[in-house]
Length: 326
Image (cartoon, rainbow, N blue to C red; front, side, top):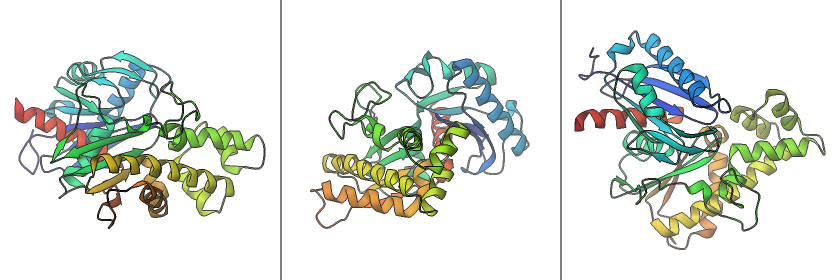
């Protein structure tokens, strides 16, 4: 089935450590329907697949379409990945290893599925349709359960020799720092991800009054909206942790700017978008202290323009390109 815009619809899936989103996307990049669920991150691959399918079916129902109307699909997934085989090799945030997420979803839906790194997918969406549109050299960083990055130079994604380039969250920003989920110490992700902030807020709540830390313990997780509200409510501990996260994000991103010299640094992810412009300004200020290659401040820092849709739109772009390539 085709919809207004010409070509058949595709499905884009954003598989994150906290939530799964799916969107039915028309040929002109309009989102026709959405589905969203919490990620069963501790329950393994089959549970994740089941939840993905629930999201797909919800998006199809909203769009008035059925599974047979889809031409292809794309998944943005945490890595590292074997993108050719569609396999998640390992993900600390999803508790899976060597899981064939692409083939499994392809079998369930009866369509070809392209699997790509989740942040690369989101970065590509921002490059084509969002804050990075019109720029040839873009560094995108997404801050959520973890931290990942996507580098685009001369209009092309830098994948590296292993096709897994972009794991900027695992740049060490402080030697001997806190242990990261990857097994190393002092990674940017161990300081500035939502997971890191959640752990520190819960720890703080055990020593002194910390309403947000108490809320995390009741709910079982930190919601980006709750963090942003705590900052607006002048929660001193929340403000301190957000400022700390911004400092270490700027430290890492500033170093990357010195190496790659992008025209724009796009910062997205649920936590960053919830905290908004003040968070961006703190990151930018920290980064500027590190950057020595841009004395006139030509390089722009901006929040992602597509919001939560960056991942699903980027995944849909990959799906449509796969169709075009045959």
